[in-house]
Image (cartoon, rainbow, N blue to C red; front, side, top):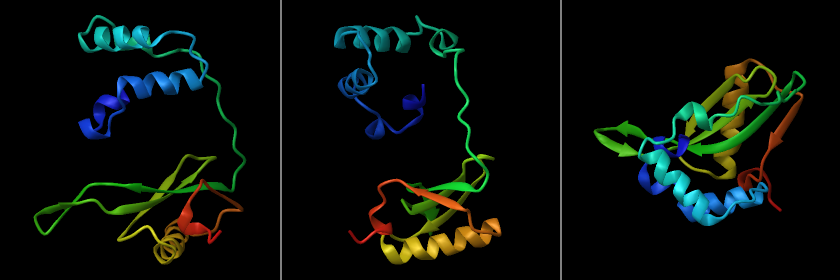
Length: 138
């Protein structure tokens, strides 16, 4: 359902969805995935049949945050642009802070961190940075 909210070029193919499912231990075949997607698009499968009622809540201690770059679409001077956004999510409260930046380099990263900490009014005890090349030299 989330895939359908994306622009067509940003959506995963059926093959990619199948490969991702296999990595998570899905025992079915590629054909099963194709049939499911086809039936769902045709409205033969309701959304409440897809959503699992079982879940496990993740626990995060206060004072931890996650940082990552994202891209968004904005209108500037009558033209659509795709600026980068540095996003900080506080894991405990799930509060998020965001700053738009012109690039994805170390200078923008450090400026963005300073801005995010100022927005929040503090600095988290722990900061998770997931494979962000602008944050490290090597």
